[in-house]
Image (cartoon, rainbow, N blue to C red; front, side, top):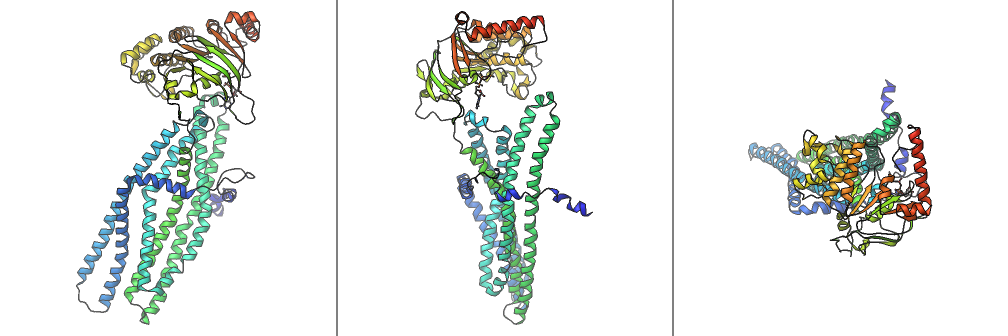
Length: 629
Ligand SMILES: Nc1ncnc2c1ncn2[C@@H]1O[C@H](COP(=O)(O)OP(=O)(O)OP(=O)(O)O)[C@@H](O)[C@H]1O
């Protein structure tokens, strides 16, 4: 029994969180700067203030309902005195009707303030969510490299929800509590300063208790939000990497890791809720104390004729009314803390530096021939201390040429493409397109002239037609089908039960890898780009589909400057220019024949590849996957 009682407390009290103020950084590191609460509240206010008119109405209703709540007990006291004195002038029905009207008015005004506030809150959260989503799409690629998607998701969902529920109820309750409190104190002072003083005796105790509690719960709530974000990140990552987890039989380890993270939330949640659970108990206890003081000492004063019985009744009611808003304030305080923590995390994202908005680079790329020139381009991902990822790269690609990028893993092939698409800008050197520096044209117009067919072509949840049309949103159905025909995708699509209207699942679930590639080619054909980026598939696809993909790609590449991260010797051999990268340097460039004749790194790579293939033919199970460079 005793053990069962202690069971919930076996989660150790997270002292370290309280000590470091919930910042979540390891001990020993300097404390992060104090979070700007007033700034955050100010920003929430700026969102709310867009509905100033409605908000004023709400505030008016709050004033009315708080005033009426004050009037009720006062009328009661007047009625008691009136009848005790036996003057009996006015019939009781007048008092009763008056009281009924006051309470009905109080209910009506608080109902109105509620529904209007919900409307304002929902609109505010709608704006906040829209701003956050739009912002997420304006952030540069490196932002996503450093964070888990689930953690970002948590900000759009959990944190915004927190702000939403607080705005819906707590915000107005806090305002109403403050108003009721000020009104009650004023009327109390006017009626009897002595009894007011008695009622006030409990306030310092309340303040001390509240301080003790919120000092502990504030950091815990913050930590909980952060833990929740981490947990969401972990869930997202492990669900999207399910195949790999299963393939490596890592289910148990993943579940164990999850349990640890989940436990951290349980711990902070348990202690935050348990400690804040003391608030109503504390308030109730102190409320009863003040009630007893007013009734006891007030009774003595009434016997001595210092106050009337009516005043004591008013005070007993007011003593309750006076602690109720304090109680509400205390209860709402925790919700408010949690909402501010949520809002801070949302504003953190909104304050992130965006992919620079092409200031002063208003030039739009219109017609593009496709001459690409890299001149002494150097770039590194990590700006401090690390060696450059690309070093002094110079080459020229004429319009319509096919350029194959070749080199060992980590050589910098993908990075070169990232610079060409301006996901990153070079640290030094220049990249020009048709003679114009890429940094002098807008990213949008550049990317509109480019299309990508990647190994793992990303398809959206939606119909096949919508997925192809993503290449050019105003394309007609006929144009979509024409592109599918050119990409060799039409025949497989028409064999599907719903044809072009087949709905694909998340990430294009429902069709094969090869078919996804064909759709990606159709999408790129529809976009009609001047510059094409292909990341050749390394995985083996059946020969028939493979031939179809190659044909589709040939049609797509015709007349466009194409950069191919190539894995097949055939593709490389046909390229107009081969760029051989090693350790971030462009060590050789030229066509296949020239490079073979030079007898350098490339020729050794081809040699090794051919030997590998011969061995593979002799021992079909060993070595590299055949057919790949
Ligand atoms: N976002 C990043 N932040 C920091 N370093 C990165 C990032 N992306 C890549 N790198 C590093 O830059 C180097 C070049 O990577 P890159 O992806 O360009 O190579 P690659 O030639 O395309 O390799 P692979 O053939 O394996 O795709 C590698 O050392 C890699 O670790």
